[in-house]
Length: 249
Image (cartoon, rainbow, N blue to C red; front, side, top):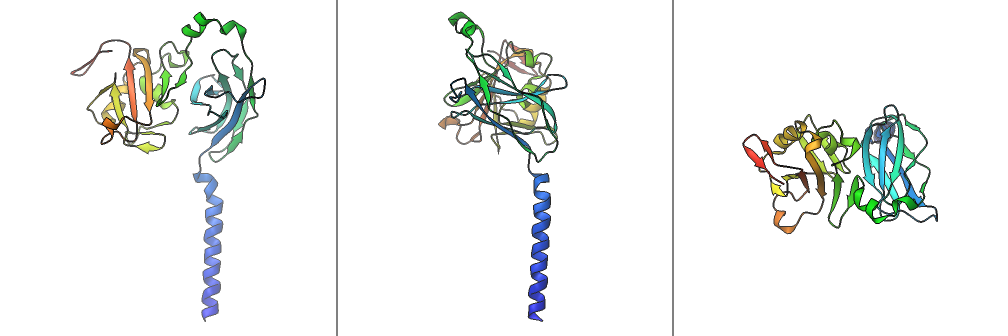
């Protein structure tokens, strides 16, 4: 009787293992991984990598390359895409088209090699052209101003495409680098509004009114009690009136 019970238990455990193994790829999320190098095969740290929809050339999302030249793009739907790598002083490089067929696929892009562009090494040009994403000591800066990808978009749509940011419109929640409890600030000042209200505000705000978005994953000590999951600072171009709150740059 005991042996029969052990056999049944083993069969049940095996069946559970097979079920979990079968469904695990479905619940995992798609990722695109790759590297960016220069023509000397050296990693191009902190270059911009942008995922582009092949159908209409729209920006889907973007990330920054790590200090060793690697990148990983999560949180996107299956479809046909291109990857564009950019860096000040280098020619933009676009990958060959590829297709992600399922939400569990891990796609590895061939190394993207970019070459220097002597025309962009002029100091005046460097000052005039900012990359979409900039890596600072404690934050990533999304330069919304003058970005063609933000034309006709709302501030919330730009935020949704920012590295490490996940906007859940249904639950009215924000997460940064996988952490919830994010503080939303306007021009460096606490907005004192719930995240749900901040999402509604950004959804009704044109991206043309935004200069930049700062994604602060390691907040200063003074914000330790609140916003310890990170801070999203929306920097506006000019004075705006939002309800009864006046916001100035």
